[in-house]
Image 1 (cartoon, protein in one colour):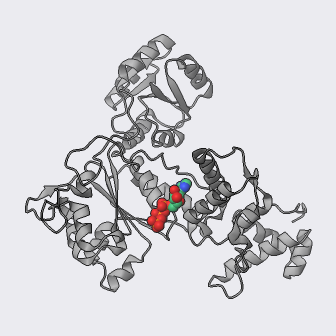
Image 2: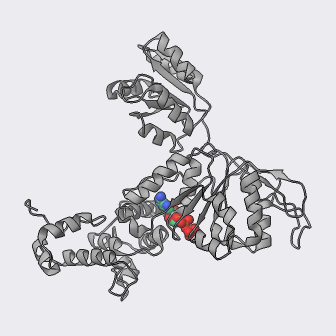
Length: 462
Ligand SMILES: Nc1ncnc2c1ncn2[C@@H]1O[C@H](COP(=O)(O)OP(=O)(O)OP(=O)(O)O)[C@@H](O)[C@H]1O
């Protein structure tokens, strides 16, 4: 049994948790937002133990917030008196326990109230090719929880909105360059939604020609076209109760767009070769690296479909726009490849490698970073991954540092130049002299540099 304990008095939380350990796993939190983050982190909690009389958040407000993330989680409230218990139960607490209480009483009440431990993700229909589910989860459905953390302001804004809309049933359109993490975000939203125990099914729109895509989405009946040797249920049916993720929606053929619009508006569809209308219970998330407004203007994307999809838009920043995250992501990817490939543990990047990782422009975003780190980790024998382990940084003209004439903004060029000059000089004064600005200005500019590394001590006066 896993208990999420929420209360704002550290000492009583510690004592309570201590008493419960043994038969229960306890995660303690100091009210929101830590509690909400814990609950939305896919931890399959069996019950919440909530201090109803916290100083900072009213028990009823906390309970309402918990319920938006998990409508069914049982909640036991700790209360100071009978009258408060009556209020707590009216507001939705499943059970109450009066303070002071014994650990034994609390344990048995938690046991009575807790739901059965839940699997992280429930089994779902295996493939759209078969009518009956075999019950085996697909790789997508057993994927580990997507972390929602970032040090970068633009990314944090995206994540904040994503967290807010995840428990709703709103359609969400995720925009961003290739490799920025659109698919990972979509999966993270699903994992934090009320549909989290149901399937998350991806359809890759550009992969197939129109007829096959239509069949992949809606299913088909045997003999409806050459090659349709069996009935197939389609991915809309496979996602029933869960989330359908349409990747690269900007490349959805025009002839399929009205069918998708109908699915979004009325939740209705037909299999290819069949007249029977079927009803779908799905949430639709979509992603694209294209400018859909431009696609609408060019007549390649229906305007009504665009407005249907565009209820909530999340614009993923490129890795260039979130440099604060580069090193922590690189370290995470290194830990991951070490774990998954059985490589030697506790490896790290040298300071020089960290510097080039920060300076590269990452046109392929997180995917490029992941691939490079994996390659370096697998091919290198050393405990310290160095610049030489990243061939792209060693190739001529591929230093990762923007060059004059590159198609970049003046601000990016200035940033790169300041970084380079600071890296090549011994003191801030010398760097300022070369740059032709005073030290205070350089200090301010340098502070604003994303992910800036402390290269040398800064005089107190500036
Ligand atoms: N928050 C994250 N933490 C760790 N890794 C991540 C995160 N987001 C994305 N990644 C990794 O980055 C890579 C690219 O992510 P993803 O496939 O989600 O990008 P995408 O924008 O959907 O790409 P494309 O446009 O090509 O479909 C994947 O290997 C993914 O695992």
